[in-house]
Image 1 (cartoon, rainbow, N blue to C red):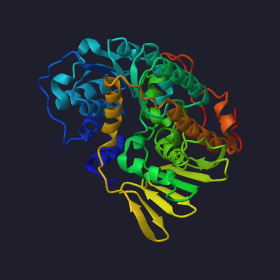
Image 2 (spheres, helix red, strand yellow; image 1 turned 30 degrees about the vertical axis):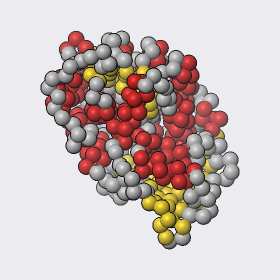
Image 3 (tube, helix red, strand yellow; image 1 turned 45 degrees about the horizontal axis):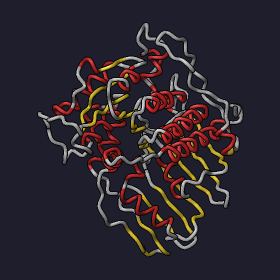
Image 4 (tube, rainbow, N blue to C red; image 1 turned 135 degrees about the horizontal axis):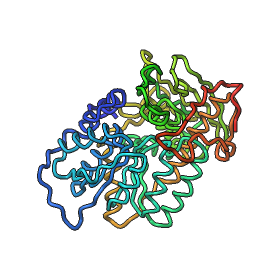
Length: 434
């Protein structure tokens, strides 16, 4: 896919944290200022949980995808992102943003209040450490869900999500995952070519996610007087493994997902990894680079290179090597080569994948059908966590070990006044696998 203004703005937004940018990126060419909106019997009410950049962007994508939606309720742990999100969305969508003051919820229980407010669909976009609990509550309350990636930050969380996915299937609820590349038409065509034998047998994949930090950890001396542990960590959530997972699990998980896609979503049997922290991170405890080597049962390898260091070479590409050819997928149109000659290149439509994923969700709901990404979203998230485990411990980690790990990063209960010690930075060779 060509590096469109939409895609660039999304990446710029992730670096800047601007709620206004999040709204602007969402297919600006087709957004209109809808000051008047006639609600009818077919109107669906959506609720947004997590009003930061990704959540605001998801709400804009949803409202763009289906003209008969209204944003009914919003919730966030903090008032500032909520206010900015509502303001920006109202500027773009006018009367379709009906989350008035009595349906704007702030606090640790805001997700429950949004879900209980009478919405039909919930968009989950809080820091991923909270995702298992938020997803479970939404499914228990019989809501259709758009669930942003990743779905957990540790193995206990993934096991919790697996049970929630089972519940969602029993209830016949739609569950669309925020692995947006799965809804990108060029990428769909590319991986279909691979699955149809366009490269012969796949023997190796190399995926890159080389970028800068999303939100560097501020020095501890800038912590406001009186700010408790939980608030400090949540306001800098990308820098803590329990909240974000780390750069591999939170952002580069897209690349991990595409590597699994290459192998028809078959789980790797094991992996090894190298990683560490090159730049100081204050109180934060995430690595700023990890390279993971996954292995499949047939001996094929998948390598994922992740780095979040400013001032370095940037790349987000996927290279696939087969017995009869090689393929490449990046921001431009993907292609497949036999020798040095291109034998296939994508030439079709390129709709905004961030909007398409919501179109799929709402079309399925309106058709009375069920679209459920649950199994593969769990598999890809666990593969990312597995890679982090290998990198942080320096050990080979099998799929079964990762799935059954007892290491629980997320506290069972959280409160604003709790004491929340920060786990020290992992040291490969010394940090033990649990």
